[in-house]
Amino acid sequence: MHLSFPAGFLWGAATSGYQIEGAADADGKGPSIWDRFTHTPGTILHGDTGDHACNAYDPARLSADLDLMVELGLKAYIFSAQWPRIQPDGRGPANARGLDYYRRVVDGLHERGIVPILTIYHWELPQALQEKGGWLERDTVERFVAYAGILHGALGEQVPYWITQNEPHTSTWEGHGGGRHAPGLRGERNALTAAHHLLLSHGRVVREFGAAATGGKAHYGAVLAITPVRAADPASAADRAAAHRVDGEQNRLFLDPIFRGEYPEDIRARYRTLTDDFAFVRPEDLAIIHTPSDFLGINYYTPTRIAAGPDDRVLLRGPLGPRTAMDWAIDPAGFHEVLTRVRQEYTGQLPLIVTENGASFRDYLDPEGRCRDTERVDFLRDHLREAQRALADGVPLAGYCVWSLLDNFEWDSGYRERFGLVYVDYATQRRVPKESFAWYQGVIRANALEVGG
Ligand code: GCO
Image (cartoon, rainbow, N blue to C red; front, side, top):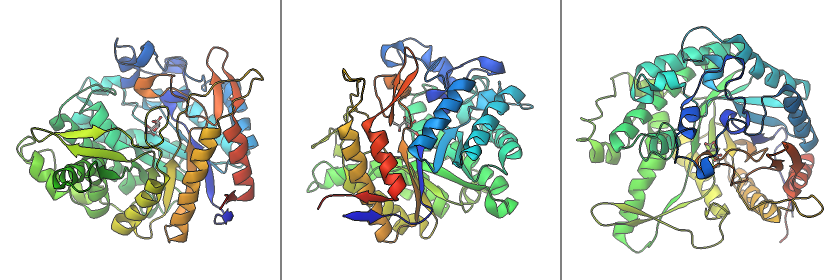
């Protein structure tokens, strides 16, 4: 079967600053919470850090990577700016050398006919702001708007798509609730406070710089990772209630304020006492968060299976069927479910972009020096087929990006997990396009998917 995609479909690949750049203190860059966190013993598998990562900050490496994107045929590329390259301590004027790097990325993409999609925040808060409370403090929202203003002023004309906040649920729950990510804080009160400020920072930036405000070519939206949350035993009312609660915390906590201007009632009720009735929310905030976005980015990886535990706890259950190296269930139908749900319940005709989809497998170079990642080809094919089905069902999908262009630093899992279309030999920084690279190249060239059956 030949499944074609709309003309002008944005075929892309994604990366993020800390995960690929390295050069942790080059050219006046200040430390971020991730620099601090990775240098704290016991936080990251094998003690890995992003100090060198894929060395993508290096000018020669940058231009070679850009050429790889051309070879792949990319129409769009998602990358993120690291805030402390632009403002080393999170405030004040721009550090010109840091800004120049992102200018070179954007110029390099334009020279090659690739659309830049720039993430303003992929979790690299300047450590100096963390020391003043970070996302627990409302003032960080003001600092964020100032930082976004520097980027918009420098690149607003050249960058058509801007991602305000990438996966705020991860910053919220991993960074401020469970402590597995920087800044390593714990507790629901911290998590919900951070969530509100992350959401408010999104709304403020859309309001100030989005297409409606500036009449500009720059489109602003958030990226949310949406997971279908399923009851481990669908026949159990307790499991279904537990799944609904987790859906609230992972998905609705972000979708509802952005697209309905309200927090989900079940979450408000559950955490009313703990948060002094959401004391961090001021009267005007929800209207600001609800400012119409220009698009929504969706990351999809895997569904979540939940059972009810003792003492009002919820239990995460492992996958039942095939899984990736990270033990994430491979569930392409969940992708269609997410896209259609978001359209039906929240976004209507607003353009959606799949900003990340992909998988880690135990990739290696064989004796001929090749990486035959057949599992990734199957994964991507099966997911793209679902994206195509969503399009056929009327989901206004404008693009699809693979996570990731390159193998890179996978947060608390360090370098063990490889998500790239391109294999990276970290010792030499040599890049080896995988079998999935050649396969994706064919899809982009045809603007279509060939599938059996
Ligand atoms: C994100 C993601 C990426 C991860 C990817 C695989 O928020 O954009 O967390 O940074 O590397 O999702 O886990």
